Length: 537
Ligand code: ZN
Ligand code: CU
Image (cartoon, rainbow, N blue to C red; front, side, top):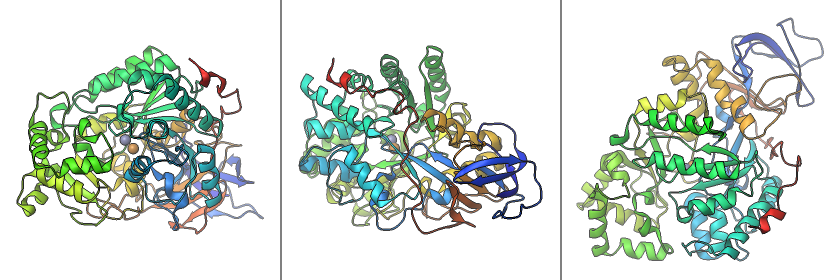
């Protein structure tokens, strides 16, 4: 039993003092505080908050089961469940005997796994055997579907190819996927048109989630929201706007418009929510600085372009052209606002592109091209693209859940601190210091709200009968310690984490072993996943 804590139950209801009794992996009673009961193991948690385990709705920890070392980046933050497969990237499905392009696609985001199967079902089976530090709820990536069917061909699919993508998606849903994700700034997902996404989302059961990293988070952000709303409206599925932000100095303040547009979509019947992380900098592959047409072809073709001085001169003009429909991140952040986080050689880590250019005595564009070419495009960057007022406005919105968007562990370097700091930072910086959110509201965004969104009945709330995924933290001292100079420092003040009643974090220290499990959406089995529909239209 957890004795004498302050219960914040995940529903958004007010905190209250309570004893929480756990048995057989579930919460069996919630009672007014009393003396320890004979025969029960007692965790004295007076002065601490007892909350449902946090749910990271935007994780990229797909490969963590396959890593030799336990990935405790999320567990240390009080996270008990991660939704993986985001931004169009998932480790499966793959084409049987998948080509080198497909391997390059996977290698851009994920560390090497040595998993060599191809179906989504086989991937889940293999991950199940390796075990999970936290519970996993997997999505299927649109990029993976496209890579599996179209390989390196960045064109529209033929009717037969579209049928094949729908079939793979239907099979993945049958094997336990929670929905589909897209990453519409990354190849190959970016080459998918709205009607393709709509045809795929039509395969989703009504409660499955379409999570989208939108085509544009800058100047064209409203159009991008409208595209996402239209896709979800036509398909009738749940919609989630991934890591909602307004990117670029000249767009700052426009979260008023974007949140209003999302509210309008809701009024029109689209079940849309969004997630966000509590930082003003984003992080992704450095190659997003290249215009879409530069991303065509395989890695060899892209590297050849990067090494061609004529092409690089054209790139320089392109990046500097404000009238272009494609809006470069350079305009959004400035060269000094883009920092290299991790490279395979570990060269240039921690330095801005302005600094790299000065050191190489070349233009920033030439420095960008050189680093990408030398490091085989596998470069992670941190981009200071947001204004804190927008971040505050998005975090405060009733429909915003918390998602770390942490890039996978395993690359080293100087990763964005969100990987190790997101959840404690919301509690320390935005609840305790800035008073943007009440503790109850913040916990709800991390628990009850995402559990409902993803069909995780029996989780995300502390209630009698609920699964005992619990997080206990010190409300006055909990804080993130990861920052932009050292992004991997674990937080402070997260004291206990229970996974289905088993202690996974003891007094702030991860307990060895993998106690998580793969979760299934509560709607699975409630009706046939429309595999037959996958033959149409
Ligand atoms: Zn993304
Ligand atoms: Cu992401």
